[in-house]
Image 1 (spheres, helix red, strand yellow):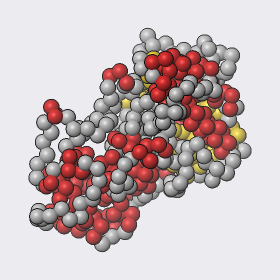
Image 2 (cartoon, one colour):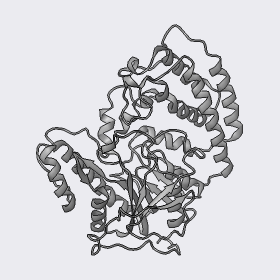
Image 3 (cartoon, rainbow, N blue to C red):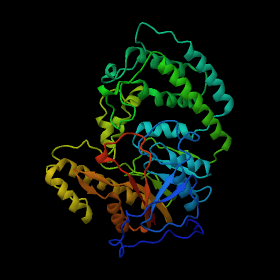
Image 4 (spheres, rainbow, N blue to C red):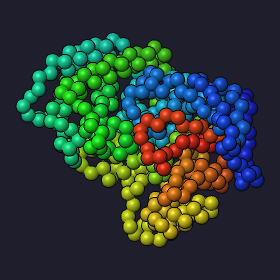
Length: 443
């Protein structure tokens, strides 16, 4: 059994008062800057505006990723609901914020994601590199990068769809030079991977694509300026900054081990023993919001995680829009009465979107059951999720997860709002998610 922390519960909510539970949107959110007090008293229905101070601290900002956790939230959750040496699970780890914070706080963690860039990024940002090895490799690499002479050929440039549309010829050569010199560097594989993530973080910036859009697109009216040597200079500048951040992380001596399984899915965690996890927290993908493979397609190609169509990778994601016509030819039930009423309305105008929403709930409900299985009795599963508008109809994801969690066996200890103030990537106004709902579930 997990040792119970001597902290007040957040304010229990049950099935009887579920229908009465509502957020008062007229009230100003409670503002908290920086560190969240571990003993913060939260009442169901309250709204909070958390102002992060650490989004670029340590290795948290080494690479952009959509819908990232701000570090203070998982830090607060880990401190409040676990002890040093415990095992923490994030079944939708994304950029690995939970895993890094867990390691710093002396907790071991498992991070699961179907996205290869997410797995690579998390592994890199949580792997502590020694100062001697990192600085020596950085000095060697910088010298080799700065000795670049533009070749007359494109040797070493990877082939992928529409490559020459995304990148000007001189940029292709510069990026290939950086990749080649990283691999030629006389250092450890972990150090090379650190430089590869720094490399990946500049790829979008030197492409023809809009730096901040959720979809990798070229906008003619953007007038983006990419000039010779820009890739080289940006890589040197970005890497220099991240080397300093890695050294700061190293000085903290993180003691928690991070496990990032290669072939595991949030819907099937059978490799994890039942009742072995002390805490789970996550921010799952939004339904109908972010196409992660498309957002990162240029980075995925340059890192060698794909060479052709990204459709197979997209199909693996929860919330995927890759569905077949025969699947959405008829209306399906999600198993949640509240959700099915809304999905039926969506089906009237867009059967495809209705099925995408249904499948999303199937997958998320499966995850709820899996997390319930692997959690120790008394442990917490905290989910941060946003609502969506699908064809103009409000889709209250948090409410459907709330309802299903009660069926699975969880006690819903609380639900509150975390207002989003920093969109790392542009999302159309009608699709933008301005509030995250935080569900605190206890087994």
